[in-house]
Length: 280
Image (cartoon, rainbow, N blue to C red; front, side, top):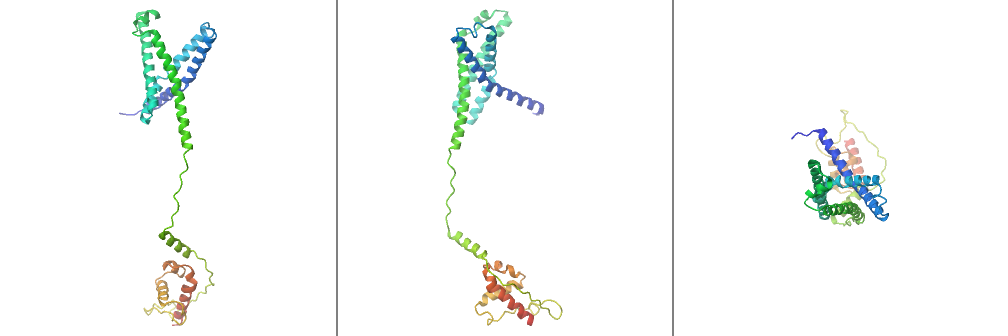
């Protein structure tokens, strides 16, 4: 089925007007209740003896009741989808009462216009008494006001429950052996050590290219007499990483050592290595 943009916009506007009429009907119904009570208390001076107020009262009540029929039906199915049983039954009863009274009144008017009868004669063709019809319409008015009040009470209650929800508590931090080992590694990597300024020693071979002991295919290791406190295994690891192309500043992280070992192991070993390579 093809969708037309103009028709969709028109349907949206109609739905808005129906919802607006259903919401404004409460004000009109409240006006009718006030006018009726004032007419009773003043012994008929507000409506009975005033033709203009009679017509205003009749128009406002008809607009409030009949214009809200579609809105009550829409809200009935909406609340059914949301799973709110009380509102579903209330608006379902309202829809049934309003549709019933609208059908009866429309039937009376059709009989009167078709048969050219008076209004009193047209009442004879209705299968229920007029007093019962009036009672049904009055009950529908009261239920409309109740339904509108129930909507706002439910919304306020939902907002209150949302605001009273306790804040979500975060789970406590549990120190595990894995977490402690990671913290030790991070602390070791972020250790600040004071280093002496480094002096670069550039040595050239007879051909004019630097020689780091790779020309003969052998790696020269500084003697153990120069660094008696540094194990031979660590010296070999430093020289092997350096000759493989790792910059001296990144050797500690490459070997997963702390930065403190740069000044105590890496720098002395590489300085001695470069000095020995330059003298060969």
